[in-house]
Image 1: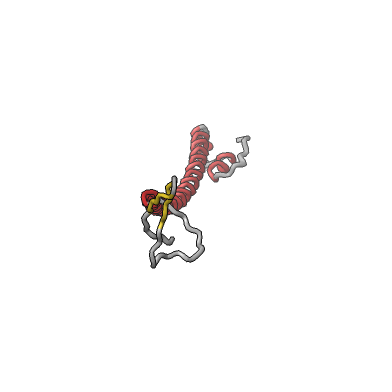
Image 2 (image 1 turned 45 degrees about the vertical axis):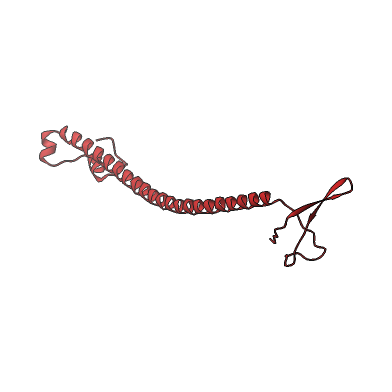
Length: 143
């Protein structure tokens, strides 16, 4: 933006006042160019506002960079969290499977305790107990 500092002069002409803004040699304007005339105070205020806006923009860019970094970190944590959740789910499934197997063994032990002395002596194991200890789900309940 081209700017030029000049002084406003007041002249009395008949019954009215006239004002003159003189541009001395070396001004940045061309002949017949339209120019805006702004008071120095308003111009300085506008510049201060521009500087303030530039500072705000700079601060916002810095804040944006920080937020982008935090977003990347959060995405990494999310991926790690998802991996841990997957591992947790697998372990939970294994625990449930082991609990079922343990329950099957407890049922088999209970049935074995209920066998007669002769069945134990000759090592006769009912089919449903063999199925329980094998972990299969198809148990013959005739026992």
